[in-house]
Length: 340
Image (cartoon, rainbow, N blue to C red; front, side, top):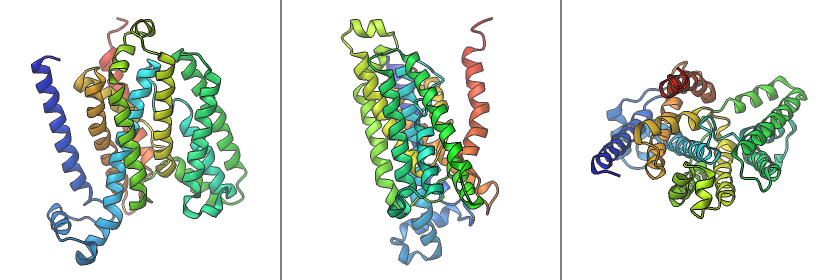
């Protein structure tokens, strides 16, 4: 990397880091009750929530964990999307390409409508979603077998998605009460409204884990972009790299989706924007994706709780409405003249 390019990359990281920090502070003020920035800083500086009054209780118990989870989830989904786009050599791949989201959906609606794992109480839905996502991933890997063909991997994932989507609809169809259907649909559309401090450790571990994995294999991923034959010639086991990447990304996505529901387009569009900002080297892409993904999902969450307040818009609906036009624009910008 040239000196000028390195300086530009560092500027990009600094700007994104500053943007994320400012966004985190500002996001604490948005919700059913608005809190001005100066009051936020004053409240945070006052110490414990017990001595900070009503604003302190709102900030410490509701908005802070939600803000931190949004950053971790946005970063994790973006990194998973980047990893899978590289492994499959398919820029249309997203974190759910292997059927992870569909498997999680099936597990979640089984818990909501059939009462699966009811003995786990509040953890029944997240556990069922995690289990469903894991089953879908294991089946996808099993059917892929020893092949390292990325097209086969994507097509098997599409098959898994179709299968588990059908099962999800079947479970919802079997519901006896309208309230169950509404609860299932609300989960499927994604929401961060129920996030608490207890949800943060796993989200942080997941985000740190997939970030570390990408940094460890960044050189192998860069070589893989040249083609599978070149990667084999340079001593890289493409199949082992694929399996490790699938395991890392699927576990990360499953853990995040289990609590937040299905949040689309973040893991699809953020890697594309990151490539525009920092190029194709995965060492740089990983950092940019982390910061940018956190910002994107954080502001999506802010909009979801402020556009129609006091009602809250499902965050998955918002990311799809905003992400789809942006994705089309990015594709037109990058490939608009490819066939002219």
